[in-house]
Image (cartoon, rainbow over all chains, first blue to last red):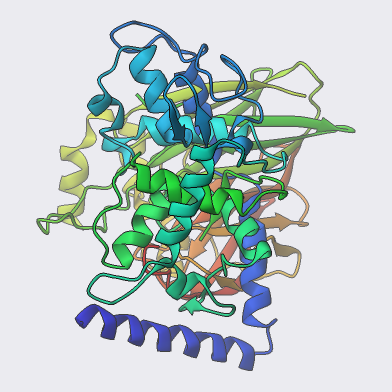
Length: 272
Length: 103
Length: 157
């Protein structure tokens, strides 16, 4: 409750600053913030994660001392280019729909010899002392789909099932605030303070949102994956934690990824 | 050990443009941890860039340079295939040198 | 002052005598930025103090110093892009100072001959503030400033 008050007060302060800026005859606040975002595009620290992930992909690691260079992300063993634009998808060897993270865990277990628990244990980094290998790998793999159009399949029955479940989760309301994804992302023009929230039920909103994650979050100084985004949305809704690499997480990812089909992938990005 | 820098160096006409990203916490010394203890400052203090052994930029930084620092500058000269080398040193005495080939 | 000196001596394992002397202001004034990290200058809390520490005279306002790719409003103070270019002949160094930060001096760049007097980097700003570009050219100091407003970040999402 207290935090709500604080947020409201901060919101007022932000508006006051913006009003003052306009009074001073500068460009409109929206234009100025667009300029700020544009100025950050050149030199995205996400590249540091991409480089670390590429190194890690090629290094012999784990009990079996194997690299991930034989890992099949869906386009054949070792093919990284474009792989992310077709994920999640059904993998016959796992007999399951897998998103990128789940597939990486699969390869780490089957090829590098990690236990599943070890492969999953640190999905999101926190500063210098707790760097997440997973986020670095995700940064590298996704960067290899930049400029490629999203083409997430719906041919296998399990892919269709995942989409349907993901759609249900998106519209499902619950928790102490009777909240759901669609509460914030089901209409145009919603925002949290200055942050415009994409309407994920429309083609443009769905495309723009999905194709700009992962992103380097300026406010956190961290590279954040789409999985992190989902996880944190669940936290903000006061939902139970969205378990990393769970069927629910894959289904929701399938729903949102598939809705972005046709759009050029443009990440890792940089966001406020 | 610190992660490698990401260095891009490109020559257009007679000018080489260098863009660098460094992996560093740049801890300000102003923040407190969960126990209320001040987190000590830890940041890059000096940066030196050379081209063919000649210094083309040197810098001193305080803790208010942003985390995972970005730096961009241009110098006259440089040819495709030349090396640009960058070194930083931080408050713990940790140092890192990386180089890039001008493209 | 005394306690600060003691701190420096205590932690001075990696510091050379020269830098201690320079930091204590015992080097002859007018030498500008020392070659090693200038602790005294980075500890200063005002422009006057900074100028005094580096032995600079009052800088002249200059329209030949311009900010580029520097927004009027920063969405997040943790990362504020700053680009500074100087058209003043014989520019030797460019420093960035943020007035309302706990310590004003943020960064100093030495510009050797052959390097364009233009740098671009990113700084942290605790709040809306004037940002100064302090340029040393041919032994003299010049300054330009720009006000940057910092809005609050989001709520961690």
